[in-house]
Image (cartoon, rainbow, N blue to C red; front, side, top):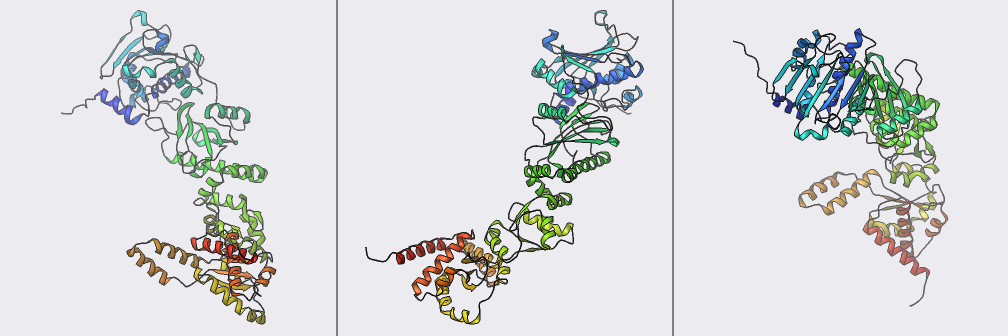
Length: 595
């Protein structure tokens, strides 16, 4: 024959406390929820009925219990059996009218959560002209229902819930804690909630709840400061009618990690659901903190998060569009303010632009980047120069910017965080964008070759200069280029840099990996760094006329060292030794004589 499951209520309570609810503090929310639902039910037939909830912690009751009084509809004896003694079944709740759309509660767990802090729960309740009923439940699974004795009879409809605390739960029932939790969960409720004589409700939400209502920015800034602990950069009104959602997005005033999951404050029908809701905004809107109230979004069973469904997906997209619209309006009407926003959140915006096309377009249009022709956005740079030529590292840009400008080559500094990756992503978003990474060798093609007779006359000098730098693997060439003030330029192509890295790694590798690196080096194209001397520079022209081989070597070594320093190139041990010897050698030649 069929049998009924036997439920160990103590085990169910343990399951709730460790796996469903994040903290015992939710018992206050459940008590408020039941009270507000009861008041809503009574006012459906009696609009003038009082709407009051009073909580009395043990310090006020004097008998060690916590009591919650409400002026709601109350329950009959039959309803007590159906609603308070049933776990997980909502059909009777539906039949009795306690899960209509306007009610907060949607699950049949009810008072069960109070066993997280109590060993015994007493409910004294009266419905209309029915007698007062007393329901008593214990954490071991027993319950009893009877008519309340005369001294406990209620003169008016409503309910009083009494909790007898567990020994380890006293901290959850003290006046400060209960007041804080009642204010946390119920500050926006449309009923008068008090802990003792202390009101904990603050009235309606501070944001507009009706279409076209004005936004009180000063009040919302105060709200953010008092509730969230910061003064927002800006306030963006939010509304999604399909979700019954109204609220605001507070733009954060300080940088945040875009990879961190933003927590949003979500109310459902003006009862706080959670302070840390995930997934309310798209990931790219990491710089906004939302506070919203909704009537149609579904909570999870614990009522501590939002249920992921098509309505939440649509709401997320709609809210993302509204935050994006704020950015667009800022760009159109207040570029200075947008620049301030990007100064705060540019790293995060750029990080998300690596994956989000909308953020990439925002960066392209509005983020000012360093170039060798001034500070420009990428869009402005393309408009002026067509081809988007960039240096992929900060050192490359420092080395080449001035020389490139002198050759009429406009270059963007792609060396800051994410900049090169963003530039290289642009053609995927806009096929008309043309990009090109600047190679040091590109500059030499723009340098002027010397007249044949001049080049012929320089051969003896170049032979001596090459001899001086041969041990460093550097090739010496002479060209004519601007700016005239620059005597020498040290250029390292990507392949040459790769070869240098291979050589440095080979020196540190063991025999096994050394063989692998040798094979890579053998397959790498032969390419050496170049020291390009500027024949237009007066000092260089004088150096090329020297006939003393020792002095030629010292001068070329000094020019090599200066080119390394001016180009912000890494200084190897051999380079440092050369810098020292050339300096001392030239100093010795400049100060002749004996000790």
